[in-house]
Amino acid sequence: MYEDKNPIAQLVHLYVDGAFSRRELVRRVTRKTGSVAAAAAALAAFPEEMSAQATPVPPGVRVAENDAEIVAGDVTFPGLAGVVYGYQAVPKKAYQELQPGVIIVHENRGLVDHIKDVARRAAKAGFNALAVDLLSRQGGTAQFTEPTQQTAAYNRTTQVERREGLMAGLDHMKRMDTIIYNRIGIMGFCAGGGNTWDFAVNFEEIGAAVPFYGTPPAAADLDRLKVPVLGIYAERDRNLTQQMLVAADTLSRSQKIYGLSVYEGVGHAFHNDTGAAYNAEAAMDAWARSMAFFNKWLRRAG
Image 1 (cartoon, one colour):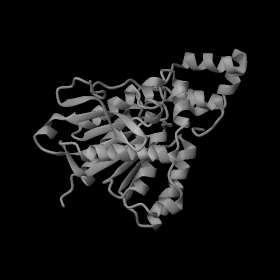
Image 2 (image 1 turned 135 degrees about the vertical axis):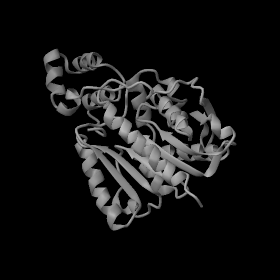
Image 3 (image 1 turned 60 degrees about the vertical axis):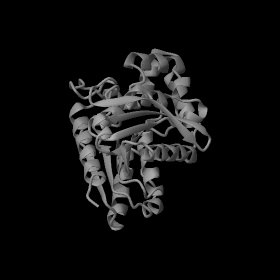
Image 4 (image 1 turned 30 degrees about the vertical axis):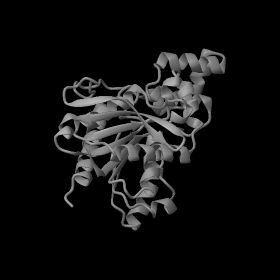
């Protein structure tokens, strides 16, 4: 579904990712189909997504920008095609003792507030965090205030451009005076999970990678993987999870270092606490596993 060019599928994807409410989804689909009855029929093709019920966000999950333990805000840095925009969050303890870093890769709507919050969560967990705006070549996500415009802008990017943007982010992080320059990981969500996979198979200098429900690379690309990877997937996100199970077989046969967690009873974007599919129990467990994975590989001795 999530790579579908069908405009209804794209609207459902935006709804699941928290771009707008269920009522707004129905309104937009009705506008495209011409009637409420036709909209209902169109949405019936997405039973998993339309039956999802977001759970409440527990206290303490989200991290305020003025949290006493971090320093966070917008940043810019040079890239191959000009300025790259980003959002940086640094644990205050890193000013006394250098800490590892994590690059955060956004979904297909760009660098939205939710992803900035994820960066702050990583900083709260003790990592220098940088969320790179992959719409930078088009002026940055801030230029696109409407969700469908944001997605259209993302769809205009190429894999090479996205890879170059993340490489610029990695170069920026290496120069931070709060970071252990050779202890940097990467994590991403949905489309960002696919970009995380792509970066992991192309850059050995990354210390660890955690893709959340991202499209895994082809077997030939997985053969090049030299980075420890923890895949986070959802049982009801059947297409992507099936692809990951096939990839896991390749990873096992190639004796790669990887872990795989498939969360029962949840669907795509279950970690996004602004969307309809959010599941607090699964999201909190997946986050804890992710931070433990980064702690293991980015704080190891030697």
